[in-house]
Length: 157
Figure 1 (cartoon, rainbow, N blue to C red):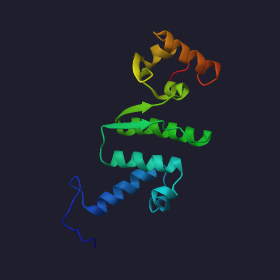
Figure 2 (cartoon, rainbow, N blue to C red):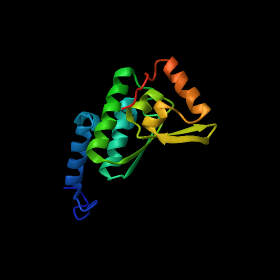
Figure 3 (tube, rainbow, N blue to C red):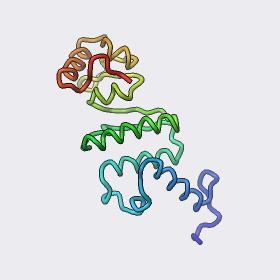
């Protein structure tokens, strides 16, 4: 028995909180053995899942994802993108995603905010931005992404 039997977290006893956290981690694709590892022993994708699970277990209403696909191989990036969709559908937190990857933004964003040199340039519904950016800089970004094959014509979730 743990040394803190009378304590609870969000009205839940420690054993139940641990069980809930494990169930949530499994939903995010983590195995029980991975939950016993230290952060430095996890892959980048696994560490991202653990960080998201920590936010969800606390019932976070806003999750900030800063370059969530950086340093990931293609397959893992696809898995993380799917996980982000699943989290949004199942838990409905607001998500602020910082990314330079317009293809990724096209697949997940409801709204797009474009910054240049740290300053706001444009804000639009994602569908409107990917159809017709309002600013010269937004058009240049989208054109460059399309020429690299990152965003297909008319691509938006």
